[in-house]
Every structure is written in structure tokens, then in C-alpha cells.
Image 1 (cartoon, rainbow, N blue to C red):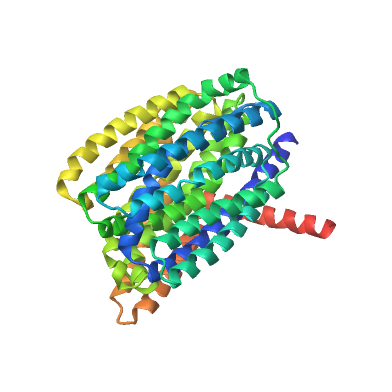
Image 2: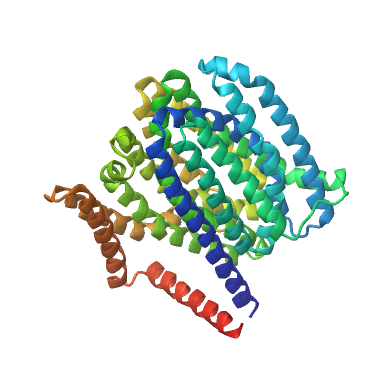
Length: 489
């Protein structure tokens, strides 16, 4: 009975997390399309350079302690408040640092316009301190419906601000205003909906206990963020901002899709796995389900996106963004392996083994930097292709510890996802031929999406794939329970 209740809570949480990611990301996707049509690629390149430095600083504010609060079996108000005040102090110090180093960053990239943009956009660091604790409270209680409400509301508000300013000719400041407004709005909405307020409590002892776990995660996340943004730093320094704009736009499409599906599942899986950390067999079953389900959804999306990239960009973003097509195709293949990465890492975090997590990051980043150092000599395309090689090798590295921890080896994981991969690959070959039909480009795109969807799920149903049947059975259960709850009210 307890397992049934736990499963029900996980499924309900996953429903709202998917709604939050799907609704928010879907709306953001539309907003980004509108902004991309109004703004120029070089303006996106400028904002991409700035967000690198903010992302790195943000690691110290929102990473490590946030995960520690979720993973810890018992948390009280002293824990929450202590982390809040410490994070707030760190965010203020980091903001001041970015404020005064902004001219140095601008000189390094020979772009004087970076100075005011950095100083304004960095304010999100301080605002984000409150959000990080609120997110921890939501995750621990699995109240993802509140996150759905706040994210969707904030996206709507920031969309109006960003699009209005872009249409009025404010250029890069439209992107700044959109991001800043989004952070302010989501913090305000969560402040109203989440029943948590910082209290006048602080304990160095509590912080020390949390830091013993979070310090390794913080270093791991810092390494990951530095590495993931290193390509942007190099491209921004060696090439014109317009090239970085194409590169980032090419990465954004697959990232948006994968984040929507995979991150939704993993956000729910961390607290769910943490609650079962004393039951290794149960954890293995949950992790396996996470990998298989994520892959079943992500593979067709990524392979399909790689195939339809050119007509999609031409129609949605206009031809000025066509140079981003090769990057979309490359990153689609790279992001396809995300479910293996995140599922393995979440299981390790749930077991409290942040020491293993850190060692994995050091090994992966060392390998990745070597690949980057070689590829940078052969141009931007080579840099992007290096991401695929790094992703493949990293998937093996991330999975390796769970052979001993959960008796779930990399080979077992590959066997589990192989049916979905082969089906998705077949779908990609099938819809690739549609582009050779003598019909208008918009019709080609519509036909490819429709044919790909019917082919993938049709064949999955025909073959009675276990993942397909589990997924749709789960969807029916969720809808049935929601209908019952609605009728009871």
C-alpha cells in the first residue's frame, strides 16, 4: 500500500512537473521565435557572452546547498534559513564582483556595450537566492503544481515585456529585460504561493553538515558550468558575435526539448530516489524506469529534429538563421544521450555519494577539455562535433559507478534503451525522404512531423513495446485519478 501511495505521488508530481516544463518551455519557445524574428543574431551573441559569467556566478548561489536540502532526510527551519542567508551573502559579493569587473570583461571581448548589460543582468543573482530555497521546499514536498503556476505566470509577464521592447527597437536590452522580469516575477509568485519565509535563525553547525555534502556538488557543478560555457567563451573571443549567435541558437532548440522532458522526470526522481535510498533494489527499478521512459520520448524528438531542422528554421525563424541548422543537427545527436547522463547522476546524488559525483566530473571535464583543445584548431563546426564525442564517452563514465552501487551496468542500460533508439532511427530515415517530394516547404515540415509521430508510436504499439504500454497505461491512470478527484470536489 505504501509503495502504491509513493508511486501515485511520484506520478502526480511528474504530471505537474511535465506541465510546468511543457507549458513554460512551449511558451518560451514561441517567445523566442518572435524575438528571433525581431532581433539580429549578433544581439543574441552578445547576450550569450554575458550569460556565461552569470551562469558561473549562479553556481555558488543556487547549486550544492539546494540539492543538499532536497537530499537530506530531515530538514527544519534552521536549515532553510541558514542556507538562505548564506546564499544571499554570497550573491551580493558576486554581484559586486561582476559590477566592478564588467569593464575588464568588455575589454577582453572588445565590446564596450557589455558593461551596462552585465551590471543590470547580474541583479538576477540576488533575486535568485529566494527562488532557490523555494524550489527546494517544493521539491521536498513534491508540490510541483505551484512551480507550474509560477513559471507559466512569470513567462507570460516577461514575454510581454521582452517582445514589446524588441518591437520598439531596444535590441539586446529587450533580452535583458525579459530575463530580469522573468526572475522577478517567478520569485514574487512563489513568495505568495509557497508557505516558507526566512526566519531569524542561523546555525554554522547546520551549514557545516550541509556543506559536507554540497561542497562536492558545488565544485562538480562549477566544473560542469565552466566546461559547458567554455565553448561560448572561446567562440565569443575568436569569432564575431553573429557566429556565437548561430551556435547558441543551434544548441537552444534541442536543449529546450530535452530539458522539457528529461529534466521534468529527473526533478521528480531525485526526491523520489532519495526517499528509497535504503532500498537499493527499489532504487534500481526506479532508475531503470527513468532511463527507459526518458529515452523513449527523447530519441524520436532529437532524431526528428535533426531531420526537419532546415525547413523548420526557414519557416519559423526566417532564412537569416539558416547558418544555425548544422548546429541544431549536431546538438540533437549530443542531447539524445541526456537521459543516461542525468538518471545515473541523480541515483548517485540520491545515495548521498557526492564524492563519486565530484570524481566523475573531474574525469569527464579533463577528457572534454582535451577534446575541445584539439577541435578548436579546426573551426566552430569541429568544436560542436567534439560535443558529440564527449557526450558518448561521458555516458559511459556516468554509468560506471552504478554497476557496483545498484547492480545496473552500462551494458544493461544500453540494452534497455536500444529498442527506442533503433525505432527512432528508423523513423528518421522514413521522414527524411519526405523532403524530396515536390511540395511547398511548409507542407514538407507538417508532413514530416505528422508522419514521424504516426510511424514511431504506431510501430511501438504494433511491436507491443513495454515502454509504450507502460507510458500510456500511466497516462490513463493519471487522467483517471484526476477525473475522480475532480468529481469528488
